Each structure stands twice: as C-alpha cells, then as structure tokens.
Length: 343
Image 1 (cartoon, rainbow, N blue to C red):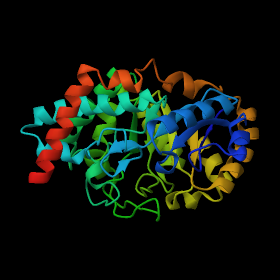
Image 2: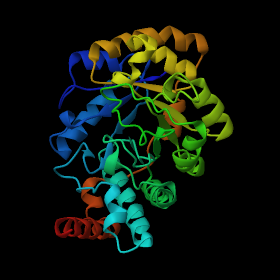
Image 3: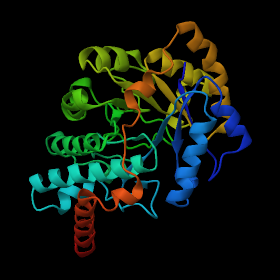
C-alpha cells in the first residue's frame, strides 16, 4: 500500500520525517535543491532516508538540465534539452548528444543512490513558459528522436525513465504550479500535435506523469484525475503498463479536485499508482492518513512501484568520474557551453 511520495525540508532528516518514512503508505521521497549541499551530504541524507523507511523506497529528483537541475555543485552542468537541436550541427548530432547526456544525467543521479530523475519531458514547446526550453523541440517530428536518445542513454546507465506531462502541457499558457490551465483545443488537434511523443515512446517508458491540465473536449477533469485519460487512453489505447505518478498534489492545477486528501483519492481512483505530496507538510500528512484505509480496502500490492522502478547497480561518483564515457560526455557538455556563449 505504498502510494505516497513525500519531500524533505533540509539537509538532514527531522524527527517528524523519520516518523513519516516509517508509515506504511509512504513509498517514495523526492529531493529538491534545499536538500543538497554537496555529494557527500546528499549521500548521507539518502542513507538516513532509506534506513528510516518502513518500505523499500523509490527516491526521485527532477534533474532534467537547464533551469530544472536540483543538484549543481559537484554535478555536471546539464544543458536544457531545447538547446540540443539549436546548437548541434545536425539532427543526428543532436540525437547523439541526447543519448550521452541522458546517460550522464542518470549515471550521476544513480551514483548518489537515487533511483530516478523524472525525465524526459515529452511536452511540445508551444506557448507554455513553464515548459519552454525544457522541451526538446516545438514539434513531434524533431522531438521524438531526441527523447528516444535520452531514454536510451538513461536505460544504458541503469535508470528507469518517466515521460511527462501526459498528454502535453506545452500548448497551454498557464503554469499549473500557480494556476489551473485549461486547454480548449479539440481532441483532433491534441491527438495530432501533443500526443505523438507519448504514443510512439510509451513502449519505452517505465513511468508517466500526467499534467494538471484540463482538456475540456476530452474530459472536464485534469488529466491526472481523469479515468478517461489514464484508463481509456493511456492504459487501453496506448497499452501503457508502467507506473503512473501524479504530479505534485500541492500545485494550483490540482486544487479543482478538492482538499489534499480528496486530490489523492481522486488521483488513485483515476489510475495513479503513486501520488506526490510536496511542499506542504500538513497536506502530505493529510494525504497519508486519508489514503491508508483506501489502499488497505483495495489491496494494492505494496512493492509494485519499487519492483518496476528501483535502480540497478550503479558506479560510485569517484569511479564514474574516471569512466571513459563520463569523460567523453564532459566534452559534449563543454562544447554545448562554448556554443551557448558564442551564439
């Protein structure tokens, strides 16, 4: 019945966090910049987190590159994915860069004993400022080969991948962190423009995170609370068999589903396997308390998320930094930085 992913407040565990980690409903932790000082400190925090937990945990981070990279000092400076095609000499070179950067992201995150980075972003770069250069491209034809490269590289490093934000956040202006985005386009346009990356890459994804966006032509609920989107389209039509994460239930785009407890119940009922309750400790406690009887009643298998997403063996940081592929990836990152500066 591990269905909740929580966050931590700082560089060390608090007594309250130890208590939360011992709860049977908690199955994951997501790390943020506030949890990071240096690699040694992070590895100790990870060790404490795993030791305090009652259940095997999935440990996660948003480590995409560009403006969404939670760990910086001591980690490689990952470019925004939207820079690859812009700065490469060809689409083929961009795809090769994508694969090596995917491997680099995953290898460094795995080296500190974190299982997954929530990546890649499969949104089209349309009118959304919160997506922007987090997206690989402004059309599916260019996006898919680059995303496929990142997926391949992450898998080669031993990390499972999470495509987000299904069925696409890039074509709506409002930021779901602070507003309730509504995408008024017809289903046919969404199907033609935003869904192709998810359709084509679903067989290669281990997890998917839906968007806190309402698409009224399809359903009156945000995708992450919609059985239409998650069960009929994602599970049945796309035949996706992996894990479905909710996006953070504390985001403004989730408020239409009610209280934090009601949001968690709605997301789980719609088909999410694990819900994220972050940046709102009181709300996270409310979610944990609310979902426990629900999960017990439904008899969900406690270890499914862990079984499908836990990392395989990984190199430690010192070994990784002497690995030929890591050294070659540093040359790619340096070249991209050089071209950014001269562009």
